[in-house]
Image (cartoon, rainbow, N blue to C red):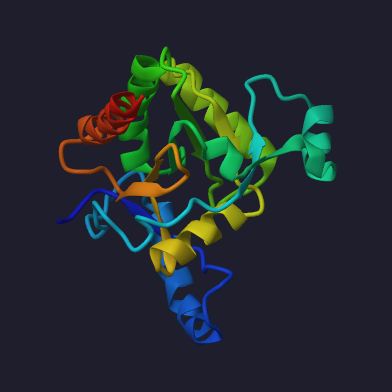
Length: 229
């Protein structure tokens, strides 16, 4: 089933060297797709389950983004790994976790994120749920300053408040690409993890039924745990 998404090349670090020869063509395609992200919304991504479903969520090294990042803070984020937050198995244990990779330059992402912010607000009172929004850099200017500026500007325009992070090294996305057995990252990509740290669902692009589909999965995982308590 086709979905709205924007795909960009991001080769997994664990992929075999044979895949590298495909990068040149992907880079050309990505330049066109990203440049036209506001105007063209490709419908070639897939939904639902992936090879990652049933596997443990890998550790993800993310940097916290805030709405009042100063120049000194930006310098600290670059120079001090301690400023990063590493999400390990213990971060996922005991809580239903939704992780969403998106970009301000991605048309489908901009359309979906306000609804995800509402989902986050709906479940925020439940301590068994957590949401991680990962704002991804654009190819025209991947700098941290620009990422912070564009993310903050978009949040202010849409009146969005979300716990937001950045994948500065792209390692988090590469880890997921390996699990999902994909050669490139498509935006938006959403991953749902259960209380045991196991991936239960993935969505590449906006799923059929929109965010309501994701909410149904979250609700079921929360209810299943209540039934066990």
